[in-house]
Length: 208
Image (cartoon, rainbow, N blue to C red):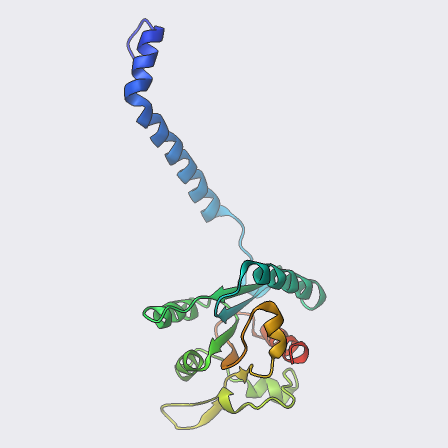
């Protein structure tokens, strides 16, 4: 803007250069958001338990599940910073690829998937065997039919228990979750297996 500054020159300046100020504001907001996103505190894997569930829930169900997870954090996992539930929408085209990306990144701890997706990931070694936890007493499945939780190793032909079928966990329906045809399993590289087993056990005990 040329000197001397007059009202007419100010009006002309903003008439032709208004977009520069809009761009400046947008860049400032974007920069602040980027700075916050990259520097904000994130709980380490050892201090959080994440439950990923294939399927969608409505807003009310999500709020109820969030409240339930916080209640469990306080009662069962007082040493944890986060216990969360995430509904996973499965896309028929890119769903398997998305799941593989999450699994490879160690994202999530407890997975509740439809049997086909569970078997694909478990046979690839992404899910942890449950037999050691059952033998130690850390996991008790009671009368649940575990047949659909067994997966055959493609190399050896041996069967391993990798998941707990959820068909009998009908209490999940109260939270908008359809348990039929799904399997609960532990992500082998989730980083918090012992506490994830506790969450799985709570669901078995309280959702049947």
